[in-house]
Amino acid sequence: MSKRVVEFFIVDILIAINKIKRYSNGFRDAQSFYYDEKSFDATMRELQVIGEATKKLINSNLLPEDFRVVVDFRNLIVHEYFGIDADEIWDILKNELPSFEKEILSLFKRADRKILTKIIDANKKELRDKSLQYLKDLEKLIKD
Image (cartoon, rainbow, N blue to C red; front, top):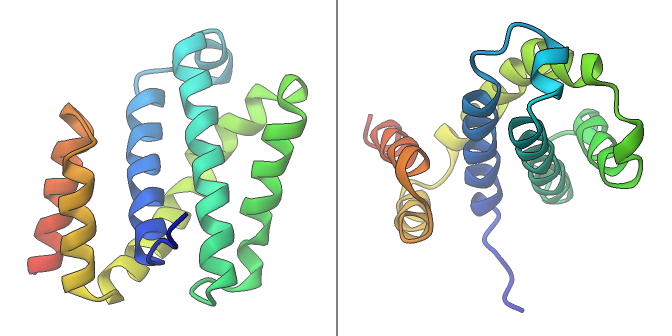
């Protein structure tokens, strides 16, 4: 297996956050979100992606150890899935994810633009519709 360039994990997190925002948009509360199986389960999958990628960024010294809580939450989701509290997930989405997104966007803006361009181009071949549009939006950030 080839080793991924660490900037891939930054883009992975941003794509996952974008998906979560789309999946959870339009719900009025934790319970209505929880009972929409596809949206809830898809969000849980993206939270796992975020946790795994965060671990890589911590191990690469791009994020401080304070973010280990994200990795720990990923482990909780994976190993205690049926014990997950919908209100806790909702709180994370509405209150924690926006500030985490800002932190990751800050990393994105400081990363090597040539590498980011290559990563975005590689991801364009794999992603569809709204995720592809989000990549185009990230490309604009690189050019600014």
